[in-house]
Image (tube, rainbow, N blue to C red; front, side, top):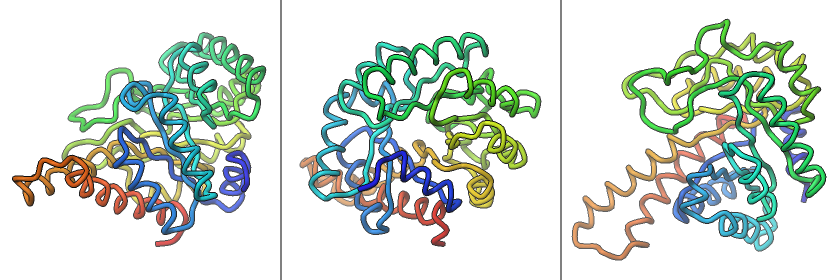
Length: 289
């Protein structure tokens, strides 16, 4: 089996994207894994700091590794949105394949300084672990929104600057870059998310020279996904849509089985709904529509 780094490089060359989907429980993990196997595509499982508290950092790593080994399947795990070196260490030592150090809300100089510290430690400890960093603030919560998160980069002058990105990658040595290109975490309640700046993505591809990750994928229009992937995005993060699918499945189960009290029987509907949404996204990201 190829490494995660090799799968990302392959996606980059073929102008497709690997789906990255977050979980909070076994139902979500099961739905995502079933969708990936049906389509025979690599997949990345994400767990943020809060999700790791719910699932357990070591538990999450072990669950994904066991699936990879048992089925000989390219499923990987990323420590999503990690805000301290302490939490990075916890994930790396637990066996994660990748980590995202998120200092995107800090000043450029602070972001570079803290990211360099993370890169140095990871390289010295488990050099095979991929390190991603965020450059530009796009909000911090995978929820249903009624307004743009305070401080999020939405105007063109606030988006990630290609020359700044080049400097950031050069000085920190990160493997992956998550820029602000019009994307936002979460979904708007009654409207699509803002349009992505595709020209900015293309410029970042040419200057940063590392694979790029699109965060805040929930709520983005299909055409924007396709254009972003064609112009340099190699991984797409989806979380809010997964949470909505999980809830939709659970609400259906409770409505159809009002007397049911067995948790796993109720969770089957959540797993099926997650599988459906993930399969749709993975087909889109890989030009299979």
